Amino acid sequence: MSNSEAVSDAAEESRPIRAEDSPAMAPANADDSDAESDDSDTKSDEDDNDPTTAGANANKMSLTLPPWITNLSDHDLMDLIKKQSRERYGDNAKEIQICSVMNLVKWCNSFFLAGTGYGKKRIVKMFWDLYPKYKKGMVLCLNPLDSLRNNQVEEKEKAKMPVRAVNLTKMNLTAKVIKDLSAGVYSFIYLSPEVLLNNALFHELFYDRNFL
Image 1 (cartoon, one colour):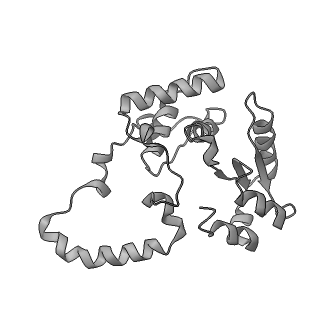
Image 2: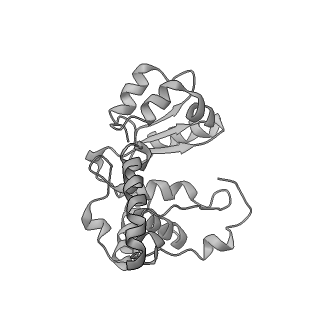
């Protein structure tokens, strides 16, 4: 994310997006249902063959939040996120951080623009905290600066409640590391654009349905 001097107005005004407000959740017109049936069948077949849609479709292979969280009202979900953040980090989360986590719970694509030190990284950690730890949820963090990735790994491992993290580079991305990643050893995975785009070992892991 870019470091701006202040939070953008759009981010300040963001609020949780309700499922019924999402165009994807709107019922199709009766007149259009027959015409769109063939296209939807084709799209469904394509999604079944595309591992990157596993989370969005929430199929049996994807990692999903428990129903007791996803079925909460906006008010109760906000209270839960506030409580967990306060217990883990010792202070109250900002409203915009909480709203961003709520949007992630609702499977909304999100973009958060804020200045250095505002608390962007905590949003990801707050979202990860909602998942049961036995499910071994993982967060992929893309960052072009190697020093910042190393700092993030050190921060995670020295925290009051430490979690396993790794900075993937061309030098340390071995078959052993790939095996550990596939087994869910690490909770936070930091990597550069070069590794994401150009590393054959990581590509094989990333498009493995068992990993997704």
